[in-house]
Length: 430
Image 1 (tube, one colour):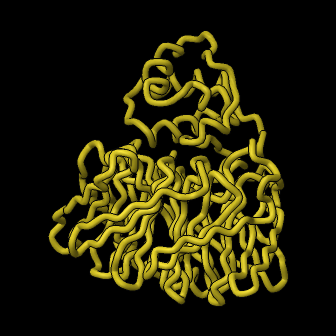
Image 2 (cartoon, one colour):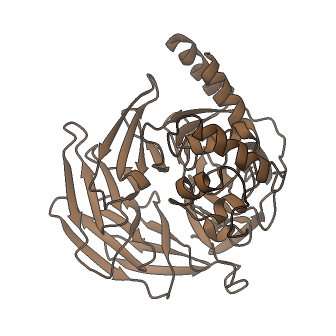
Image 3 (spheres, one colour):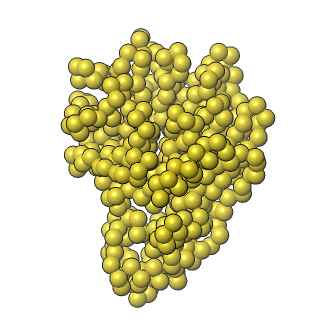
């Protein structure tokens, strides 16, 4: 391992923390303190994001500040050094929001790769059936691809107005993305790289979000702030849209169960919904916390499905995870280890074990929950300052993750067997 790699791994384990796209979670003064590099920070950092993301951060050392903004923008000396010194002097590590970790027997390690284009804020990665990892570079209007066996990366440039929110593999092996800022769905031909764009065709449906394929090959997607659900037939380009009955439901994550039903999480309400793709019928289910805390926000962001078709979800508003049994109608919820303000975000199920992250601690944590024993175990995410906004399982039982602010995509490698195998591969690559 070379010196730069060693520094990267050691620096990222430290208590960094700043949710780059979650300004509503940050409270801090709106003015930078006086200092030699105030104008530099004002002109470079605040030109892209709100000053409260600095003033409301948990604080860092000089090396940590350099690592953070070095993944957003490439700065030469002496500018980088001056900015890091100013930021560390005025916003040093505070120790706030340090997570409480739960010990256990499971073995997990992390492998991360830095995306080529700085400041793109990678999100929603998945592992393709060919073993490559794909992600949406939202702020760079691109889709990225990584070969984890070699470390080789490639980026596909989209329309600058696309700003893709998520990516997914289609039944044809092509990669589809949601054009969150230009009301489109796009398809990247896996073999040629050719991009086909499907406009939604309705000016009221502005922000396609997360996608899932039905068994018949049609693509279903949430349209979050516009409060629509949509269906695209890639064979014809036809798009069908319907507005949800629940006002401000803000449909978010979407998954398919073993019977072909699609399930959607409502970020704007304590509800989840089931879609029958054949009839297009939508059925809504109120979770136990419906109506308890309507002013807090961040309700049901993501969901996942186990082998028994139980629906698992994160209740971000109250810091809990929940399970819904569609066969019995029973709901059950468990508080996350770091409590009501832990803000669970992404979630998936691997071999009927539930995995999710707590996004409002620093660094954010990866949490394992065993439904049989109702027990937790957790780990700090190495570069855990940018919030895992989505995660997905791999065919070999690991998790594909990302960190938006640190410009990384990665793997959470689960279990002794997987860790031994991945360790051997890394040795052979060197």
